[in-house]
Image (tube, rainbow, N blue to C red; front, side, top):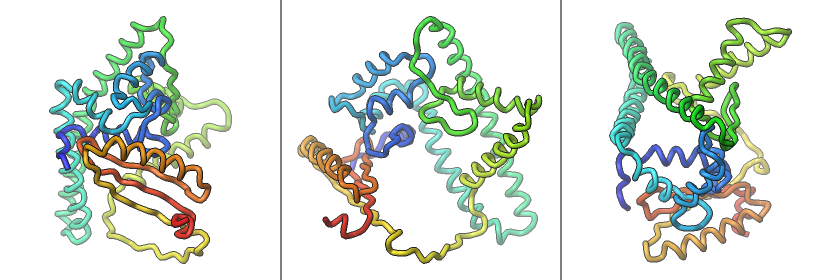
Length: 290
């Protein structure tokens, strides 16, 4: 299996977020929804999609996406490589802290809290100039193309977006939304809105928290009729059989999706890899064996 080029793992995450139906491929609609930034037009996005689609399948895989963007990284390549190292080091540090913190001395716990806050301060300090530069070039591009009909962008200021949120547009919308609370809102809905915002923040913190209390197993008795079968299969494919395998795999997925007993099917593959990973969710083992 070929080793992935450093700095490219970000595009695996990009692909995962853009692939809304988890079928292992980006359609033109998914591509437009994710990459629309309030500047580029639908037609330009369509042309870009076809340029990236070197396999001419009307779908993009991770290999095509990585290949295209790897040719345009320029000075960002080193930065994305550093982010990979940072993410690895941060995960390691947080996991070690989570294991050691409960049994550490009072002073050691104090030092851990200080270091955690300082790490956050340093990350915010790095983020600020990038955010400022991103806002500037986004706003400048939008002003320069004010007479052109850009690809539509939907921004949900209270939560996640259905597609991609252009940095400047999304952050500006959120700042405007947030400022409503500091200046007061008309009508009786303001307290409710504030409670909803507080709840959303709490959920975000819970989803991203690090477990400092150890693993707690949850025991549940689930009726058999409420259970489902998850199938995980790996397929190493030789390069000379790749085209035939892709065709067979596409036919299998299309046929499986037509079976009402199949709840979901998706494929995972990585750039520079000859391995395909197939995930299937079925109502039961009998339905899968069909």
